[in-house]
Length: 379
Image (tube, rainbow, N blue to C red; front, side, top):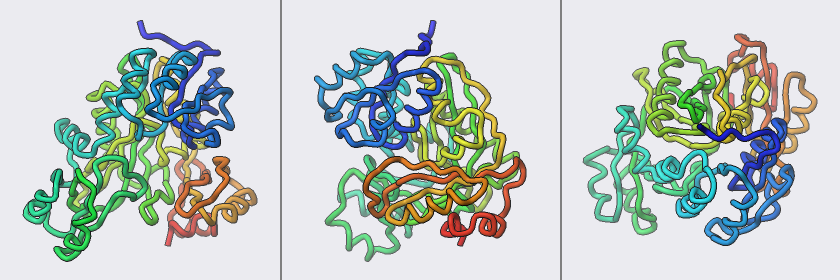
């Protein structure tokens, strides 16, 4: 029988960032205690969790001390040595599993697994060394995107290559291995977050429409403005991946809706996701509560939305002007992460703006209702 964590149980979260912070807050509301593992003692999650272990992610002694203080382990981001998760799995239950973490850590492995499930992705080729660069043009043509296979996020570790001259200009500086992805002529970017429990039951949040600025998520619209049939297909894709990977936890699935009306999977993330922050205020169960429920061994429940929502990321350095405006704007909720320094490109918080269910306005309506809080993403 699956082990169900009772109130008062101890959940270990690897990583001390904002996703760990909001997961710990959701856990506290359910009566669980969170213990954070982080290399630094000034991370956002440590402000809201009662205990922590400070150590490097590959520090075996610190990992063992951490495991002694928790009943179950999860993580808030993917850039963790798989060997460390393997050690923890030998000591305590870990959800999602090391197997899923390893797939999500490597874009080549990830794309291969998604294609093996019969799912469409952007066309791609593995670029394991400089000699493989010559094969990209024949396989994909120009333009294409080169990406590090590991450790890239928010547009980091990526290069757009429009011509042979672009490739020649960067080829001596590229870190291998890489993946080359053909550009998809897409209509919009979407995401689905799915929660799957120890019993094999899975439920999805509504499909979200996402818009980016400079490689960083800017706003999310919930629900996505697509047909019910496309929304059901996107949720079916998320469930197929969750079942195929035997997920226990939550999983974010990023997709493109291409110009032909077909869905293509971009990537997966086995953790709470920036595009799911709207669920904190527009759903009875947020993505963070769903994550904690799955980790604790509770049964999955329908993830219903009671309001339409727009999520706006607050990114440094110009965060606090928008934050103060949000506090003065009816229908908005402000979530700040407690980070001291608003560096350029650093996520400092987000704003959720709520509308009655079925009444999400168009871009002009959003701009009129929310003014300078959202305008950057609606130009």
